[in-house]
Image (cartoon, rainbow, N blue to C red; front, side):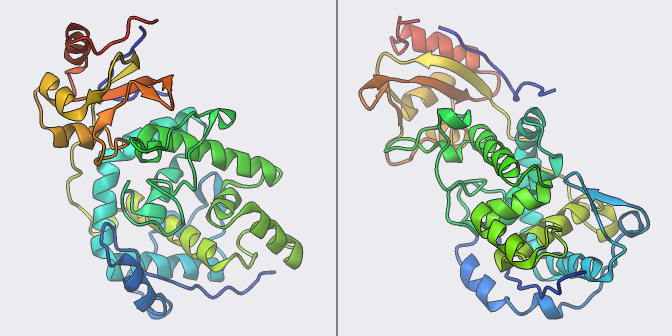
Amino acid sequence: MLFSIRGRLPSLTGACVITMVATGLLWGVATWNAAAEESAAEEKSTCIRYDLPPGVTHKPFKFAGEIIPMHRQDVRSRIERAVNFLLLDARGALTGWFMEKGRYGWIFEEVLAKERVPKDFVLFSAVLSGISKRSSSRLPGEGWWALSSPCDEAEGVKMVSDAWCEDRLDPELATRCFASRLKRLREELGGASWLMAAAAYVSSPKELGRTVQRWTCDQIWDLPLPANADELLTRWIALGIIDSHRKAFGITFKDPPPFTYDQVSGLSLAKDLPVSVMARMTGVSSREILEINPKVKVAKGVFPARINGKSHTHALAAPEGRGQVLVKRLKEEGYLSAKK
């Protein structure tokens, strides 16, 4: 049996006139979609109370590996409107996003760094799902990155989605899957910019390709993108500006403690392991076990020894500092398979 224990993930070392169509993003609120519809026209008329910081407008501003042409009035005004919308109309949601980033951002950052995806994509999850595994997504899909389906071995990330488990709700696996698909989209677009790859992720590579051909234009700031892609990309950039200039915008709250745990990998179970038993072994509540293992479906509450009749190797998250205790108790109570 091979396993590793960690408290955090290992250190991984011209122009086309576009009218913005805006909707509201209210993190973690069930009425999000209705609120978005009601505010669709509001962002166009949002008053401009906040100017963009000098560091953004007075020198080249780079985002996701690309220089954003802030010298262009059309580009700057689009981003400025999005910044003011987030700070004025959606400030409560904004605070929620930053709180969740404080908890889970380090996981996203380390996985994206290993996958060589720009760090700015950490906040892409915010405009997709509110940096929430269970918040209703702007896109059809599941989890942090609105994944339409789990990745498979061909994509480099083996994931499970069945009656007991949804790996799209696992922050590490889901981020690896997102990174894999994003890089593949970029390759399909001929090595285009990361922003173009993000636009393809939000819409589709086929739809984006048709748009490029129709307008004979491949510059993202000149291209009439599908409305949803244009809105989310602009808001994502605005969110990045606010995050890197929090003090200038009056955002001074303290980040919450990061979401940390011990991960024990390579475990083959001899019998099904109920969440309640794992909670007893580690001295915490079942609710806490589910919190650090979000992929486990509450209706089942079990780590199965076999999936579709085949043995399955598990990676279990234990409360921080209790990974070794968990392994010891699993051995003592006969939950670990003797099979190597």
